[in-house]
Image (cartoon, each protein chain N blue to C red):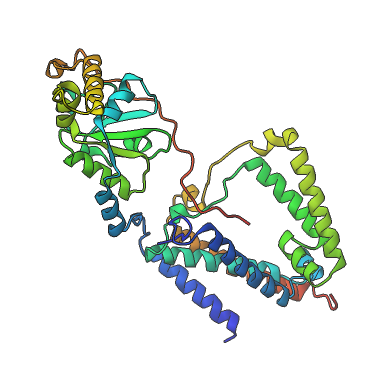
Length: 207
Length: 196
């Protein structure tokens, strides 16, 4: 048998194997557990309530708050401009353009930080960028922005300034009565228009 | 795990170094298998020498099989492998220009550099023409930008268009390629040419 015939046979055999076995459609996750642990430990995912309050008041268009609590809780109360992506449906194809993007600042929040952190870890593992977590969740938000407690008058100036900011922000955002904010008064905003991300990060190349 | 560059396993600079080494190896093999001879390259159009067809198709099916097996073992994420996007009209026009240049000049862009490296004068002229073409394309870009970007099809693949599994398409291409090799060898016997 000539070498070319052997080569042809080998190629045919490999082709037959390839045709017979199911296609691999899994995508290996992007981050190693060690790298993820490092990110978690560094707390790099957190955005403070003060930063968020400032962005909401200034109507910063780059901010997208994502409420990951179940729909009924979202309807009872949510932060201004927040959209609802329940954690259970986080991986639905319809949310991918919102989560996998590189222009906006996505901030997850839930009542505490547990569920928001879960959402953040999932998106982090999928290699999505620009996703963050509201530090302390809604509970801490209520504590700091909605009902800030006055620091003792002996506190340093920064402390007093922060309190003044929080008091102002809380009033601007309907503070003190956040529980009264009903779904009717504060309807869910229309989903922002998202242009689909044109290309994934591919290795560049060509002939 | 792969592509190495997308996963930041190697840096862009390492990538260039590897590309350089692979390129040198590629050029060496091209030259040593006779691809610097324009007569040999043009032979594929006249049927007296189909080695170009055989080499490039063997490379293509080897690479296809390799990528699918790597993907099967989870060593590469095929979604991250670059595929040239298709602009239908400019692909057709480019194919015609490339084909005409190939028959007339006896080189494709890569082999012309290969031949120039061993001092072939016709290859130097070919490269000169290549640069004139690049210059005309780049300077006149506003004129043909519309045509260049017309009929954008994204990145269509055979398996998508046919609704088949990648593996089945690969098997089909292997069978077609082996058939072509057989026809090519038949043509070599049918249209022999003594000296070239």
